[in-house]
Length: 461
Image 1 (cartoon, rainbow, N blue to C red):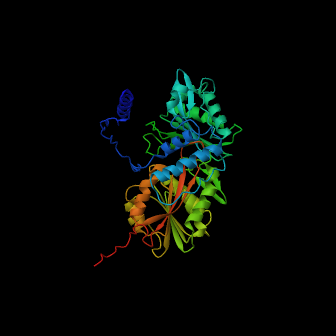
Image 2 (image 1 turned 90 degrees about the vertical axis):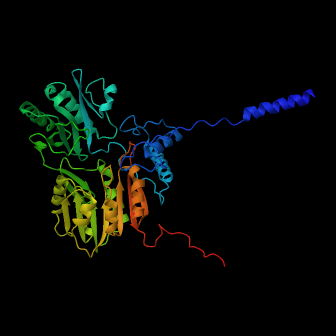
Image 3 (image 1 turned 180 degrees about the vertical axis):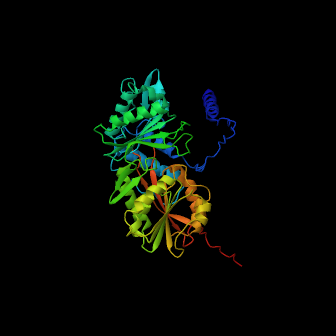
């Protein structure tokens, strides 16, 4: 009996041990306001996918700690992490088609043709830092400049020279500076001083500093003053100036120069330009492969900038129409278009990219078939743009995303307006960072594949 009793006691004890725990009270879900271009709630943000991939590959999850969190990884490892993260992102959103592997950057480090430093004055010293949040980790030794693995050595040398001057004979102008910006190519450089205020003393000092810059071995071919009294977080804010001018040349050329394959471009010092010039020839070639241009078609180039796509593909089309909200970008595009008047016609105008403009202001021959390049800024397209474009019935659309998290919402909008994904090509425009550029080809759903349902079977009688 004692054995039976012991057995029963063990069973009762096991039952108590294995009894499922009482369910915890459920907390009401936290509802956060949805930002424009935010992802669907069922999918993951790309940054989360990247953090998970880093941990899975045995690397620390360093995202958010700097502007170049992957710069110290070997490039092959970085690409492996990004490929895994992008596949997981695509899968988590249940997006159509399957992305290709990421197209690597020809230059993996020291590739940035635009860089900036925030100017901070602390305890009598002037620091040039990558981000203002670095105040807790300011450089402790001269030249008081944050270093970057993603910028050419010439940028580091120019910043070091300026930091030395701003901490000695030019300290009087340091407090007026918001940013120092370097733009240009890999062989020629332009320095832009973003200022919160100007007066005669500051302008005189800046001109003298410009004289020193021209003598550096780094080939500084131009210098500019850019006035931003609002001290905007964006280093080339395009709002109207409250001062006597917005941009003032100190010395050198009026425009910057860029060569992409056989194409040569001039552009305004404040106009948008991709920061990784080494990959732009690959970008144009991928665009040509996806769009399959014909000389009987028009190309509508939206957010055209100085004309990278429209002018780069001009000879392959019957007509180009380019639109950009920035007047200085359109001025640069017009200047570039005039270089070869034997090429097909190109129509350029400045306007915001919205549904009204697309429906009412698009010039061109209505009998031509149309393809579209849509390359918006990081915040994505305005509401109604995709619907308006779909209403023009283009044969092919190349939608370029510099913000991966905008892709799901935009692809849903294309799908709702009768377009399906043809191909997805991620490109590593930003090595060392947590960002990608993604090319998505969209085509009309000619055969009703998007809305296909199983045929109804009539009931048996």
